Image (cartoon, rainbow, N blue to C red; front, side, top):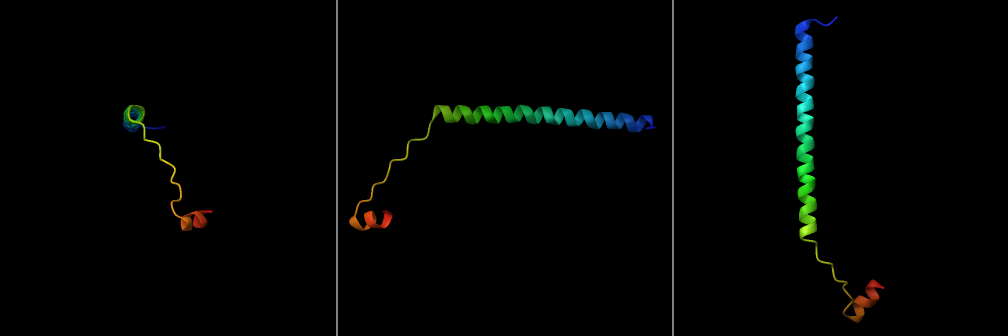
Length: 62
């Protein structure tokens, strides 16, 4: 049998862990929302295809 003071302390620790997980969940949602908003507002420009310019590069990359 667990004495009363230890049981109260255990409940306090469990409540603190639940509050911390809730805060981490909220922060994760905020960070995810921010990254999605930034990626939608400013998409990366497409990378142009580089064609070989000299005869040596054509044979080297072929």
